[in-house]
Image (cartoon, rainbow, N blue to C red; front, side, top):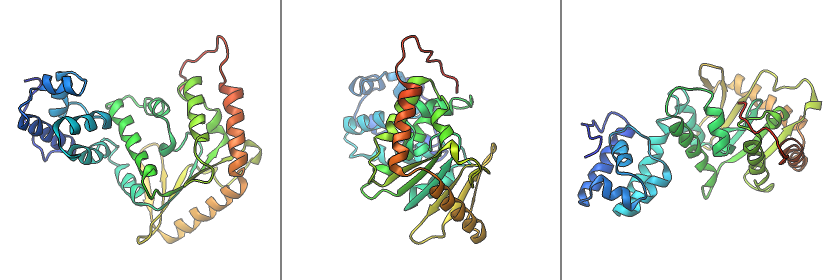
Length: 282
């Protein structure tokens, strides 16, 4: 066996996933190397996941479910596993975000996490060196699955124009990220507005914030500092957040004009140029 150690399945979602993978594999009479050859990976990787040393990806998990005939058992566990890889202080917000029917956000520094491409997310998350970067990227991409539901939340995103110009990850990463924003249907559930530089002083100057609305629970406002996030359903704070957001939407470009600005910045700032420097500067 490769990298086998005793696991306590109750220790964490990742430990439980590893124990289940091992149980299901052994029930099929397969060695780690044999399963690896079926799902196009090494036996060592199977062992690392079974011993909770590596976080599985969704692609890996779906292949294993098919190979072992689990009827999606591992894929259903994966959401819990990936959510557990989020910072502890952020997990309550992620749980609320997944339940919300309406998400409003103002972003002053980077593209909202639900709209980030994989490489953009990798560059943003890579600024902090601790932990497994692959796992943190996978957790962020997992959050985005709520937008692909049959009944997704309405997501209204106001981006400061600075977000378009801040070169996260390099020219190609930014070009692909802005192209991703343009691929969002203008009449869909997700809308993007850009707050242009020409606005000057505005109600978002105190910083980024999110508003979450629910059908049966109190709405909440969420803010972050460099240490942790803060959620509150305080009526006064919520009223202030809603008012600030209404002002930001009114000051921002329309959805159509925002798309035109995004396209222009994408071509003028991140268009393919011979000999251009594509080094990451995030």
